[in-house]
Length: 206
Ligand SMILES: [Cu+2]
Image 1 (tube, rainbow, N blue to C red):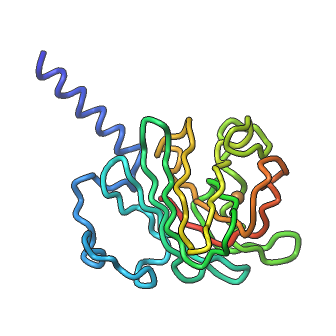
Image 2: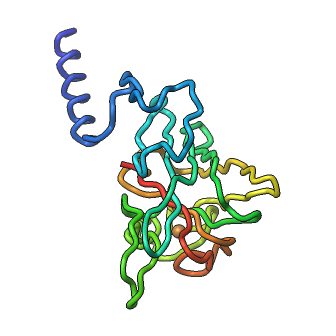
């Protein structure tokens, strides 16, 4: 009986690995270039990798400035924690104007610019908002629209940002997606992105 339980769990973990081929085991040491205890300058961090799990309940997403021309310099991090209340996003971003910024999970794991209606658009390769139920409309964090419609990020006059929480999502919703911060506030209703303007910072989650 014991043997049988063992082989079942081996099969189960094999299946998990097959579903998440890029996910590192929790025991993986951090790469040498990112010592756990040092405050590594963001500019020295890789441009887009976002897979530096500190534990299985936490994900660090490295964000970059995005423009119609390129994925630019590092713009800080967003740490995502799985809690009993849902996902908690703790932004630590640089270079954002004071005020509210639309914040969403976008469909594709890319922050590259793309041509749209004849002109280059920042982070257009990220696609639209994460919408696994095909709701087809933007409704903000409490609405019945895209599951990727997150609460706005608020930047105070010192540049500090409060964390935001969303119910009903888990870290697995973030796999192979991107996080996008927009230039201005989200009205939580207008399609497709709450009238929140250009995509200004973006991070890929592999
Ligand atoms: Cu968006």
